[in-house]
Image 1 (cartoon, one colour):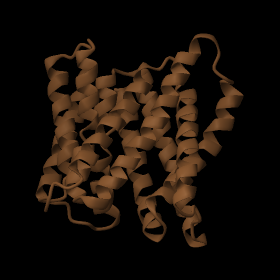
Image 2 (tube, helix red, strand yellow):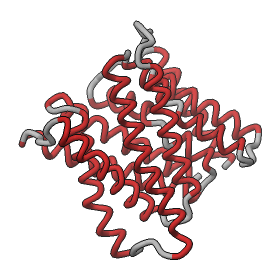
Image 3 (cartoon, helix red, strand yellow):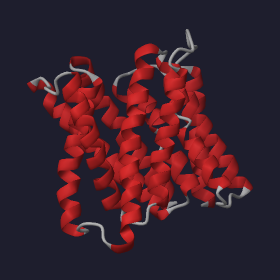
Image 4 (cartoon, helix red, strand yellow):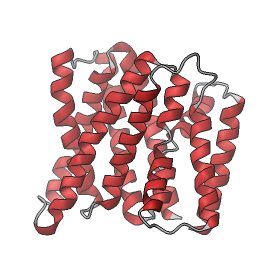
Length: 275
């Protein structure tokens, strides 16, 4: 139950961060906002981690290496996602990327994690719900599909690194965030400016804090519960994005998105009952 709750809170935090970032990226560019988001998260979590956990030592280095790999994969996933969104249909790109939770579930099941029939049904409902809520309508073309699939696979890799790391969730978040920033900042500077208009800076930092919250909750979910459950619950940001858009922006979800929300609710309720 706690894994389900933590995973859903992570998704909510990610969805809220995306709402803050959306306006900033329109005024600047995605790479600039990525740099601000990652810098904000790193400046907050790294000093706290050094104070509480210190540097990795002994047997913790393998976990630290996996966390660093997660940071590199995260940059690659965002890079692929941004390229997909540049050339492809938003609904198609979002739907294909949202399969990341399903990829994680399949991999850990193949690796030997036991899954009961009821949990299997719940995982399918949650994964299907994530895809349906992310799909915004009939795609005009399949351009960008390969970028989106690549992003989903890389995001799944990030979660698997967290799942099999043997250091604290706080250290995982700090190391992965730092590595992502170290890669992103020079790329952003070499391709343009990282300046954000004064009126947008509060939004940029707010998005960074919310994204950090999502990362911390995601690592906690993988630390305390089955990776199958953590994988699908932490990727429900599309569902929360639709709900937030409906409540705050008075957007009208499409029929498939309502069906996706219903599937997600059914899947999550079943997971909460049996896990």
